[in-house]
Length: 238
Image (cartoon, rainbow, N blue to C red):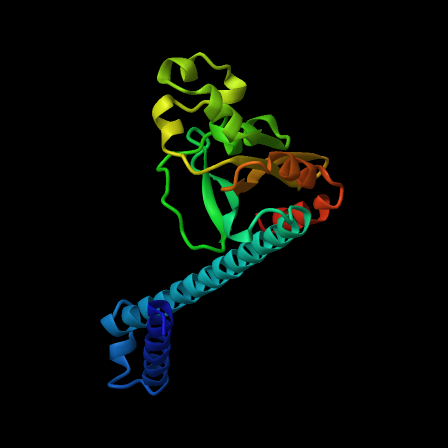
């Protein structure tokens, strides 16, 4: 049983016991007079009970949203599996990134993923606006797909890499680019939060392939109008 559930159960018992003692004026009527320790204890237990119930509610909603994101990633993976039949599903990664952090230091936080082959080694890169495919997708608010193999063919050295344009480097330094050696093609699709007549990017769903030679398949798949429904599911869980 989670700690919050145990705490709520204990506080519920204490609250009930104190309420019963108060109603019977035990051990005496003076013990429950204004400002007495027993009365203050009853109020404190009541507040703590409310706080633990709130913590349980928040944790439940987070778990529900996390489960929804995982299912959305599975839906994206199933779509890729159907529309890119030449790619082994174990070499496909799907991630939902959501905008996080204070207004002056926004970044993308991984909030859900699908990895059939298990967790991969993390790059340690903080994805901000304009950095990498996901950062560029966030900044530009449009789908972006890149053939990373083509970029690697150009980036034979630090000098060659640093001579490339921003469309190829996407804000990554030579060292950061070297920390993502396994990716062959990556696609980022913006997720929008709509409010009234306006909308803003609240996250990105990213699809990466670890197999070479499937960039065109991936690009065609994410540009297919049928993919809009899948993106809509991701948006509802972002």
